Length: 89
Image 1 (cartoon, one colour):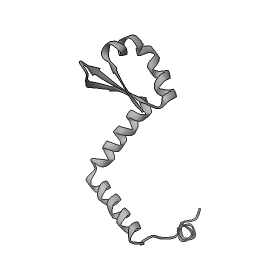
Image 2 (cartoon, helix red, strand yellow):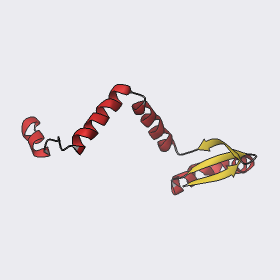
Image 3 (tube, helix red, strand yellow):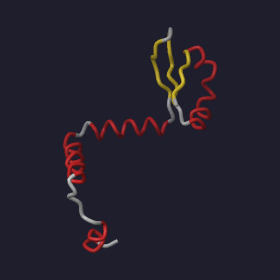
Image 4 (spheres, helix red, strand yellow):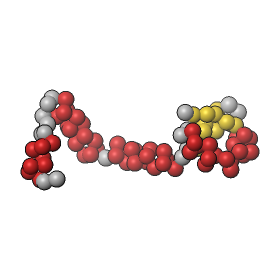
């Protein structure tokens, strides 16, 4: 969930954000004159976004992911049991 707040409201309530964001699993869109200028989010959300951007910017990794998805869609998979037999648990 995302809620919008003006910079003035944010200034008044800044100390309550950690509890609010954690409880609601939400982000805050900070606005100035009605236009978004900042986002406040839980640290876990920020870390997740940074990790996702790092993965998506790695061309080789993304190509491997796309190839894996194609393999799955076309049924080119190895049963879990075979992997366990070959590599152990």
